Image 1: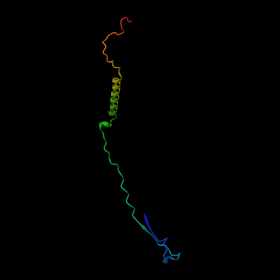
Image 2: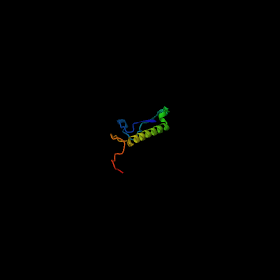
Image 3: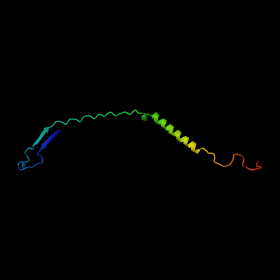
Image 4: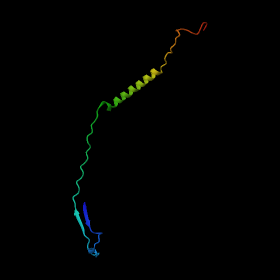
Length: 95
């Protein structure tokens, strides 16, 4: 990087003549040091059972079985409660 010190646009009483040279000073500067490279921090690998595909497949199958079993148990026809005795109640002479 170069810093430029210039009096190019400044006019003073001593700079009335256009033929006078303008003062330009170039001062070299050291380049800034490059930023250190960012390295990714190692992440902790979680190898628990909850990260396995087969665990969640098993959980899904168990849940589907529970829902199916509950639906079958609730939806199955239940015998109606009655106070009548077992037998034929069609009456006498019924075919």
